[in-house]
Length: 588
Ligand SMILES: [Zn+2]
Image 1: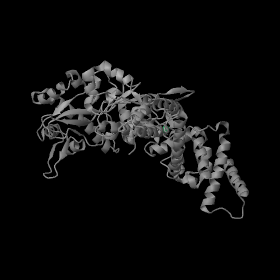
Image 2: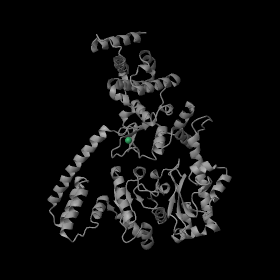
Image 3: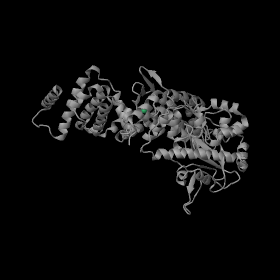
């Protein structure tokens, strides 16, 4: 069952597209439209365009496009109904009761409720007499009561079913509790028990303020327990996509964001005034997290633990962010395990100085390349210079020239030798890259052209179909004329047939074209394609001529394909014949 058109349109009018997109993309006015850096692919010059006039957006770089519903779906990873519901709730529009595909939406809503209840329960337990051990631990780590409340920290009782019992009494089913990863089912007894027991609890909160997961630290008295356990992925939580502290950091990180290793680092840095700090949740830093951060900040400072594992994690994080196009710096902590320890020993002001002096990604890589090399030996120096040249071959020529000078001074090798080694490595890398690119072309990811896979086989027809649909969307008043000449079933490619039919229906029923009424019928990729047609170059006063030409091409291609072409006629004669048919129809 579809959501009624008038409800969709009401939601659309109450949520203008600029206000929906601007929290994620910095938009600048460009004539009648707005432009910004696309949140769906990495780019340095803006190709993401917002058209306030018809409430759509389109990215010329990656082909993402659509309306407020499509944008919300893509950016929040929601399905269609969820996106409609979210925007309806935001603007106070009631969606009439009906048999929409609600099951996942309702389950997610339940899980958010359960998580919120659980967070409250854990916090109350922490503040009770029974939770004293956990509160002592947190205070012992230097946190204030205010910070503990700010982050909603808590404690899980050590009993097996305390929280499960509490929540089932409140009316939640054990199935829902299991889906929320609050309870687990015993494979032996089939009974449900609390997933977190006897732990200090850190709620994970998303950018919209929902509690989406938990991270639990073992009671320090229990030496054998795993130090941290985290919620598994649930319908509302993907650990590769979220960051601890982002709910607070997102408002304070326009200039830079600090990436640290663990929950405790985040909390103590926030307490020390660095409320632009986040941490991944028990995983390595992922590309999805890098993308999330690039929406909010200009620069990332990576501050992972100074032990070997931490430094390996820094290198991995640098690799992950390599393609994000964002400046990255690395903060190396002198003689300290982690930022938390550093601030306790040296204070916030010293940490701020350290932060301002964090080294660039290249400097850090050059620094690390010297690990395990004794730079007092000549052989070792040569080995180091070779490694350094490899690092610099991956940078632009100004950067590499700058560091080549430094290296030359420091190690007594002529600068020209270093520079020529760098350019030799660059040529070598370029050739490898080229090979990779060729492979990628053969095996492309979903690109705009792939939205209509039949296009490749029928380029002429598809191009004419696209033009015709584009003109129809821009001139719905010409619908009756077009309808006389061509029907959806005449379209050669399946996608265009469906799009043409859908647009025709909209015009017949509503006398207008609004892509927001197509969200249930097409995928976000297809909506992007339709938007690209809607906003392509306007045929203006030539619309009728364009229509005629397009229809002639489509009908001809159609006949060629279906074998109805008279073999004795030349292409030109065919063109005339079709044109005659069109002219006679136009005269009707
Ligand atoms: Zn894009």
